[in-house]
Image (cartoon, rainbow, N blue to C red; front, top):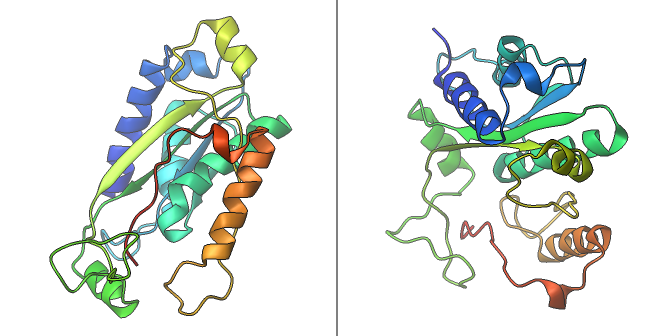
Length: 214
């Protein structure tokens, strides 16, 4: 049977393509290359599900012939997938990209792994940004967006929700604990994204944080 993560991502990708004003067929017509980039960190459905199949089956069903990549960078997997899609657009490897992520909890062993890395809270609240932070609650979700160069999107009359002016990724390197974020590294990657976008911190009016409380 198909891994449910494949099914729900394919459904979500199709909805995103429709919402952008396309069908899978006309998104890739005239030999336009469409890439698929998916963030995923769990594949526990049947013990041998492959991350790659989530992206590859999407490309297969929609006949997308650009890069088809599943990426696991844990909590940042979806944003990493979007960053990789942007880099592929910048380089000209693709004309359009479907990017996003999926996370379904399909096996109780998933919680054991989170416990092993001391990521789950022992209490009944998640306390991000607090000195009392001790972990998070595991949950599920799926999302996808269609990314295209701005000039092409405007010319085609696409349904445009927003513009990504800059993105950056890095690693936390060594911090005081394996599962603890490195504050300096996180500040550095934000600064680099702002620099690539040509923005000053004072110009940012809204911040959505990954507040896991770890």
